[in-house]
Image 1 (cartoon, rainbow, N blue to C red):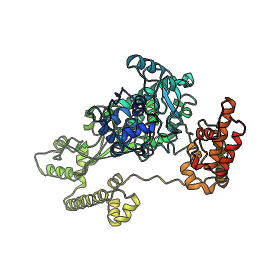
Image 2 (spheres, rainbow, N blue to C red):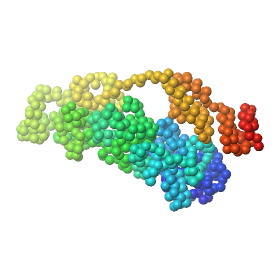
Image 3 (cartoon, rainbow, N blue to C red):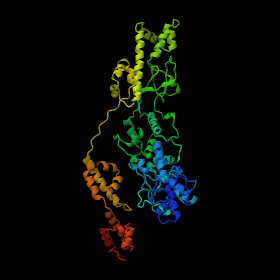
Image 4 (cartoon, rainbow, N blue to C red):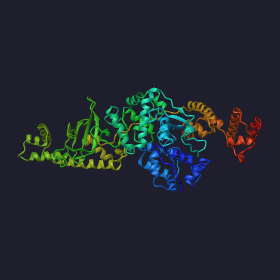
Length: 616
């Protein structure tokens, strides 16, 4: 059992809690502390998504600590939860509870072009306040989020420490926030005109982490986006995005260079960009930071619940009422079909409503502004069999004149006359028979659509050619209103200029290799390291043979283990000589992290060579 486990402070990263425990434990190494906490030496010091929480809580043995609360209040997972499916979120919670896992990979962060912070960040005012109140400071989880460069509380710039956040030299290191850790901190600088949007990102990021009542549905969040865009004229009445207007307006909304500053810029003519992916059905993950950029554009924040304003249909959500006055379901909400078109003169939406029960079809111009608008009829397109039979029934009753029939049916007298003149004693049976066949064929067609919803117009015609043709000849308007939406032709992608891309990649690889070579602490130059830094790992894995020059350069610049050991030896030997610190062969090998059993002939020669410069 673990005794004297430290208290958990508000918004404290769980890594920070473990670091404070290590500081108090008196252990010589962080690895010993992790072994004490988890009972095994395989655990690593994960900064954002701590694992094995059930095991840790069992070893603490206190009811004050439970895995779900730790995940909710002391890890970064709540920041991502609103933008992933419920099933996916529960899976990540279960994995963090039961064991360590690559949650960042499962959330798509490894492949995202939005990069996490390199080093832990902190707010100096928070540090001073916490030190004065509770006697110690701690790493805030809200300060470590991408795009958060300002403290949500004090509205001042954060300071970046020299403590690695992810790519630690020692994966077991647990380093608390103290005066020693912040000694080499540097204030994060940004243009003054970025202040307001960065404050918005900081405040909303903190809200995502700490407000457990926020709307957690990718579908409803998307509806929020589209409803706001619809009201601002960026979506047509047929629910199509006006991309030529929307994309340029979105890019111009932000200060020059701001999107690039947050690694979220794209060109106006780039059709496959993160902004459009965030507005479409959630098939791929979109980083929360980019959702916040969309929120900023639509001047909205994530609500705590869904509202009617989040629906973008100009006539409200289905169902709609049947307005056939003679039908037994008059004013009942039985209509689920509404075809929306645009008035050629006013450019306002026009809705056509079709009742499957009585085939009564009417239309009206929208959008609906008040509740009673649902019960208005602009024009009747088709009365249907139920209405016609009632008309003939009233006409056969001598007590009903033409005017009385018109009043009863709430139509014009001329309309009554027109329909009665079209009916004669000879063709009435044929009309009834035709209506019965129409109703039967319509039901059969709708049944096929419901059973096979994925069929296109052409596939439906091939599926039931005779039925399709009969409806086309006899009920063309109804058929066209009940066909699936026409699919857009798929544009063929332009071919990739691999020669030009090879030249571009070659330059980037050389540039990144130089950056890695000058990194402190020293990092080995590997293909994977370079690819990850350039965000080209997936492309290199799939298409590296198509860029032969890049492939050769990668092979040339990659360091073997022996070469990296030699570089470490030469680096520390030079450092000792500059600082005038005496050293021996064994002390040089030790500081370079090379164990005696792994010293090869060439490495041994370099050790002797570097030691010869400075003899004890």
